[in-house]
Length: 299
Length: 321
Image (cartoon, rainbow over all chains, first blue to last red; front, top):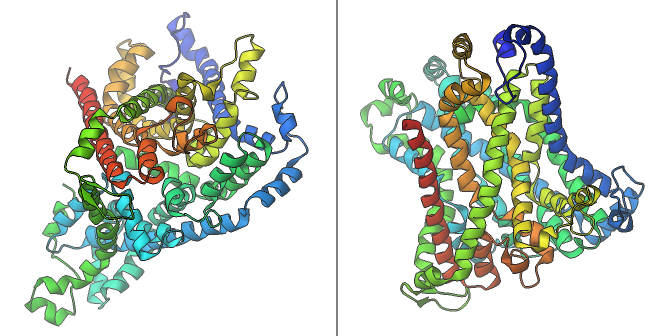
């Protein structure tokens, strides 16, 4: 595997003028260098906005507005931080975001894996129709339901509270589909049959036979759900009508709307702080997420 | 297809206590299973199916969300067809989509091919390229707002450094679109590269070996072997980009909200960044025109469906040639 990819020509490079044989022997090393240089350039492009945000969060507005632009960190992070905490209820919003993301993640993991277990391992009347319906639901765009959703939640008295974000997100088609694919191959029917002979109930089978073997699948779904909820913006913007009781993303956006043209240093400090919890979660699950994402796409 | 072996197996290892289950295989004996899948369907009923049906009903009415509903027949849709603001929002969306998607797919493919051949540090690279995608659009839009700022933005500083004229990026129609598209390209290139990479890794190495034996150059190999075999993955990426790209909202909303004077959904100067979904939000939640908002939502749905089918056909057609 490694040897074939090593000698395999990189199509993006222009053809060389040297003789073929020489190229294959000497070119491998040089090509590797060229590849890594291009890739590192890509990494720098990916990473630069993060770096610049950090740099800006350490400068005053006057410094930011001056030319040439500041490319190295300054010394005003403390000032920006205290201004940030004066302008928005940063920790209150962060608590709301955590509350929503954590609750939704646990609800999704439970409801989705339970439904997936049923779809993967049992047959019952209407299974095909129910599953097909669920996949069709996948395709319905959010804004089609947005207005009535708002109206229904207003009637229920949920508008303005985190309930309006948590309840509708508690189970989803993607997670059920994902876990079903995972469970079909990971849970062996012999195990289920054996547990049935032992007299295990349905819930017992789910909890003691199914869940332990699908932990990696749950990890992916959990991290994916957490990040999605943490970053969610459009619906919270509409549903959280009390400007003092919002999630972090909405608070950041308010901050940008009010101070975005005047106090970039402070706004950027907020953006940087809001990224930290997410980056921590991503760092924990990155390997799994990246691998599963690819698998999901080529399946 | 994969469900076949399941059906052949003795059905339902657990359906009620063993004694009663054998006699009556009535639908009620499966109640545990139905209960287990019910949360999703109940939620979908309450926050999906009923709302979607209601929004269709709404689109034939006039309603401000508070007073009484008034039947309006097809007039909302008739107005939609003649609404130049809606048409220009379709134009904005498609232009931004094209500006973002084509460079993104190209860059993602190049990155994936490079990653597929560079054996060392592959995981480090993948991690770094994926990072932009996990960050929130709000934070990213705030950061890119400063990158494209007219007065102190990095892009203008660069232009000035090489002696070119500065551009008022967030104040001109094309500047706005380029800024939004750049943001999207930055955020999604790594994600798509990882999907392309997964596709590339399924292509057997012997194929490349054989191509090299036949004297095919790198470019030829790419167009004759890699690209045709990657068509399904390319299709997947294109459809996902179409469905998400045509419904872009957060990027223009956050990027342009502070330049807006009338509404935070107005899409900046001359509404140059007002995408379809922004227009939907503006009509619905700023103007409280729930009936017209619903009609706009169905219009967007139709545009997305048509455009996805067109894209799908184009990629498939080329496969048959």
